[in-house]
Image (cartoon, rainbow, N blue to C red; front, side, top):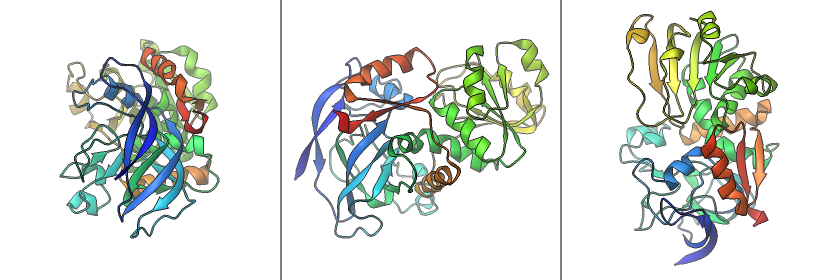
Length: 348
């Protein structure tokens, strides 16, 4: 059995986003049914829709920054109840039995986590469909609570942009007084600035666009470096203990390595795929590290939501209606947009 749900998605890697009907499964004992109020747009939605990573399944309904209200729960659900404000991020299932899953790292499931869209269903033979839709059904372990005080529209991007930047800041132990740089000031970058600032760090934004300086300082950055200005980059050599690289396209990371202090880390959270050839001189001399970071487990995601509620950390957003999705995608594809687009599903 299933329920027909209104959604917006693509039928192949060349198709624009268009209205479509999808089927949502009836509740299993462990399931939570959610009426979606808002869904953020992530740059990954474009990558998947265009099959940039060679793993896309169609038809596809993107969206993994989902918030809404619980409308029904399965017979064994204990964590959520009808009327709760809840959120769903990049994962909707995993084996829940392997070492990573039992230690709060469901995104590292050795049997592969089930992603929110464009993935084979773990139980059944369907394809997961995401949050560009009026409702979704998710097993309770992968549903987070939206804390009181967090605006629902602003909470949506936290489920990807928020956790993607919160997780490395926590993993590398950012604390008050640390000097942290953020490369890029798009959807991920502006969240990294806000979160690191809330943790007490002194934050510098690295950008190719001098025009973004005022926007960077307005959200908490103490300084801005234009990465194409050799003089500015030389003056900042060895300054930072951590650089969060949020740039979502292929780029040269070599110039950033020179900005790291000895034993500093450059953590990539944006680009997934090839980078230009890397000269390891900049890593070996100084015991520096080039690392990557994905999202976070469900417990860490809930911790992030609670942190944001406590410290008043929310993304800069532009709320759009479903018929504006294609325009928003066009703007994202043309360059780094210094805010997150959020679809108001109820406005359909």
